[in-house]
Length: 420
Image (tube, rainbow, N blue to C red; front, side, top):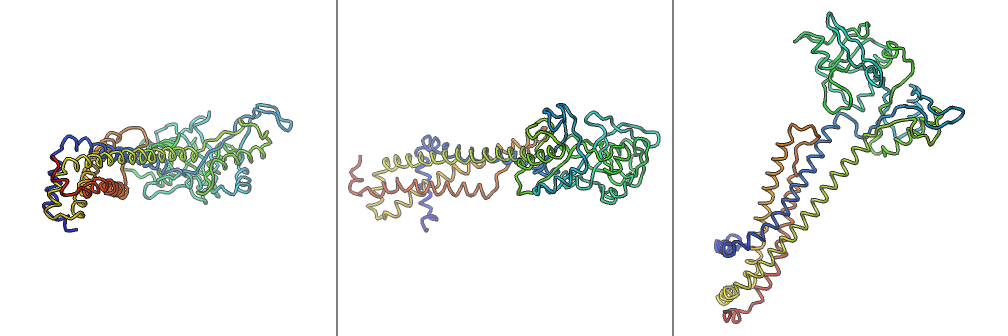
């Protein structure tokens, strides 16, 4: 290893590179381009991963939503076009028949799906807002960030059908004075007084919910609007190891059985499978990462082979020089190490330049995507992967350097000194 710290070694490497500047630069570009492609594409894919993970951080990624529509096929004496109504009792049946379901949250709403918004008032201020009737389990599927000193709905609210509510940020600003705490205060929902127990923080990308939405206990909602056991839709989360696509099919099959719908009727129940979409996005992102790896390795390999060819030419041009060194006592090992070091240095320089360029491009992409309305965030490549790529390049550079090194060693001093 002494030759690594020998000044003459590095002077000879520098002299060899400097002697063929244009040829060396063109060859190095191939390796630089390969590592650049790998860094840029992998980082871009990671940015997409990060963006969608952030967008879905408040929603269970293995979740789905199911609602009832109209039948499109006659069945069991019922005609086509029969409207289906989901019921609260469907929840227990679904849980019993589909063990892969972890949580089901029945939901009702006032302000969507053809229903008018609720009239909300406090003092002399009045406005129309969307009101949801929910169970506490809903937060296991879609997390609600509640400001300090407040809370979301709990089991006691459901059991006692309490007149309590969780309001949104906009609702607070429009109904309460600046600096006034809404917690413990009262608002009127369609002329009925409700006590505010929490304020939820609005998170963009959370579906059709907004910053002015109000949440009240499901049991209170059905008393207020006389909905009985009717349910507008189910929010469902499957266990992490479950196939959410199969769970979706099973849910529809069970609901068809409960409500006497033809097994082949695909229009009676609608659904939206968030888990399926998320898995497709992750699959697409992994595909880009894999593609970048293949393209990067192929380009790097081509570049490294180019470096080997350049060194072969260099050895041919330096035949007399190498002969003189052998005649003056240089061992075959010293000559071999010299050529291999040239290969490794060129590969390493190209790799570092490619990594720097890739990092600059990712920084530019990150800066350009800060304020766009698309789930994309912090495109980076983990340091261990960068170091691994660099290590692979050094190994390839060493292996490819063995070819010109062996060619240099095979030159006989007497033949080299006769070379013109």
